[in-house]
Image (tube, rainbow, N blue to C red; front, side, top):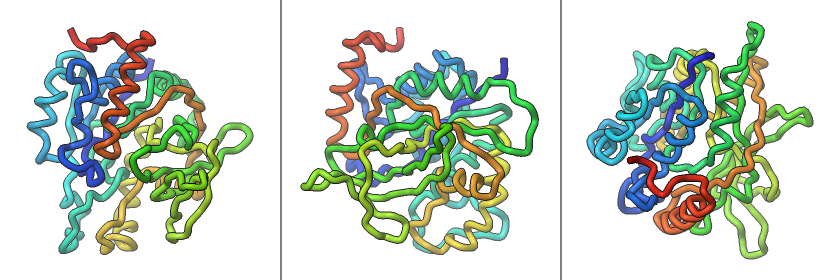
Length: 306
């Protein structure tokens, strides 16, 4: 069977979370963090290698809180997303403090990936089903083609919201046969007083959103060639957007661009597991409660590690 890797994106500064690093918030009964459960589910699904994309300045804390115990049970690697990780001939714009985005984070793991891989956010709890679905997709034998065969776990938008503030989501247009037609990044999504979900598109226009809309939670299955493509396209992106202080080289947008160019397609795998995350500090208590329910239902042991 093919080898598979899981890339965990944990380099985000977490500007909306408040005090502390949101990716390292302890939510389990024995101090487990969301990534502990992500690793547990990924290993159970059959993934062989784990790659954490982090910032160099949180490496020591990251290893102390999660890295050292996971290194005992899995093949673990670390990649570092830094602001000055730019192609030759490019320099960091003065005043830039925001990370370059999820596609740039993936690029940092390029030299560690030699097999198909899944990618997830560090601060999202995805449930077990998505890992099984994506792993099974990645190990399938397919005839060779110039088309990149990709997949994503799709969640209903109503199940991906925070009760404590707005969220950003990639909203998906899916064909009748289950393939992704497009992803549009929508910002500041929240349920307003009239009960309607609204957000802002890339042009800063207010848009109304359907409850059952399929949202990308950055849980994708990708071939290793994908990393070469996003690396090759990054200089052109920098030429266009690199001087903007808050611009981001985003994974969903680059996948969308590959589809528009006719270079790849994405099968949407409906995921029925519960999702929760820690976007805001106030979300932590809700995540703890949701996890207690999962443990009570027998989905996880009370103590993940012996």
